[in-house]
Length: 206
Ligand SMILES: NC(=O)c1ccc[n+]([C@@H]2O[C@H](COP(=O)([O-])OP(=O)(O)OC[C@H]3O[C@@H](n4cnc5c(N)ncnc54)[C@H](O)[C@@H]3O)[C@@H](O)[C@H]2O)c1
Image (tube, rainbow, N blue to C red; front, side):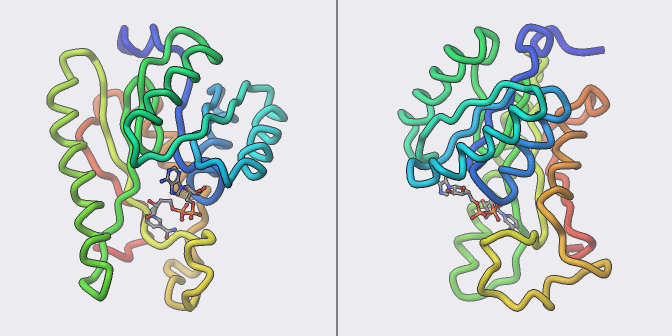
């Protein structure tokens, strides 16, 4: 049974970093699932965002680009306001990663301790902690909050890394593998799942 909040919100997803990589794959997958999509990215990604919009419109869904730096709360608020204005009155807020009804999904990565990876891993675990607290606080409103944790995914982020290292289960993970998990997490099939960080890593970070 869909929650009253979800029914009121309709099927709109707000996706940060949707211009390329994992965000793009999630945007396109959710469009195919029947969502209208708001893609938030930085202005220098405009050409790529336009390209994603074109693909989504090809699936018969609405898509808009809203430019915002996720480090700036005011820019994010403004991007959400534009989304509400252009895609309908029902979406009130979603952030970082992707959302549906106020599901919160964020990229999390479990990393070994190496130079520069300590702070990276710490910020990902912060997202995980935030996910659990927000899930507790917002359950009373019928709002679920979850995070997805990709292992190594074949995106431009890995252009300078030996891809052989990333081959697990016989191949490198594609952004679409992450999108499949997100498609499930935002669906009614996941209606009793909240406060979780679910990994899609091919067993790399067990
Ligand atoms: N690729 C991987 O193996 C992998 C694994 C685990 C987690 N992650 C995490 O997933 C996220 C996306 O990774 P990806 O591989 O798709 O990266 P990517 O570099 O291919 O895409 C990132 C997107 O985010 C946008 N972006 C960057 N800074 C931004 C900002 N301040 N405000 C708004 N948008 C911004 C970029 O313009 C780009 O479109 C990152 O948080 C990354 O740490 C990636």
